[in-house]
Length: 344
Ligand SMILES: *Cc1c(COP(=O)(O)O)cnc(C)c1O
Image (cartoon, rainbow, N blue to C red):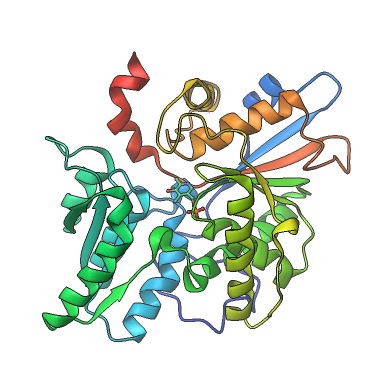
């Protein structure tokens, strides 16, 4: 499939290992827009389909992994290792990326192995990753220890951070913003706001750095999945600063310029509530699109609520309607691990 980037692109100087089918589709959500628009404010919702990156179920980690795997290969690695929750989409995509690149893959998962592997964990196994279990609090320590063990055993191990979120991985989202901008100009769309779920912050940081590099002034709102507003703003600003430097366009970002909404943390990370359930069924039944219980369900539910309550603190329409691009970051394989809660 041809990759239609405007040449040159902002990551041309960085090594990239192609894993994704790009560009991912951008399309309108007419039925959902009609269902949620207020009487005085016309809302036009669009969706950017990074659930369709094509790598073993897709998702936002694929774009980060294009740069992380290239870096691992440049360093002569034969093994990658990373860390996540039991139902980590990042671990599943890392397992698939490693398979594609001919690398061994080790995953440190926080929690206890279920009697029957399902959802992303089942896919990790099918993709040939070796899983290592520890408590959620001990995950990062176990990752460092495992890297030492693998190196002591003679492997050339490349450690990928939680969520793939360092400057190397986040660069994938600077390139993604460039892709989105080209698509918007093709269809004549001027977004007033981009909305994404934000957790380890790498996706948002890459978009923020990309906006700076491209000189595009579109606001980028991260709906927090699991972190308090101040904490997430700080980590996105720090990582955006590192990413801009990595892209060769240094600039220091401050937490105050990062848009984060942390009103929808519910009962915590991965806990499915009414907000997520309603968002999942709304998009499924109005548009035939599957979002996920942990990230996109929470972020889309949050967006719907913000539109009802008033979203003017984040964006104002420049034309006749408020044009919003919701970034679908993937995650639907985790739906199967929530079967009993979704059907009750
Ligand atoms: C990891 C993930 C996110 C969050 O991305 P960060 O870069 O960690 O903020 C959002 N959506 C899905 C489906 C994910 O798997």
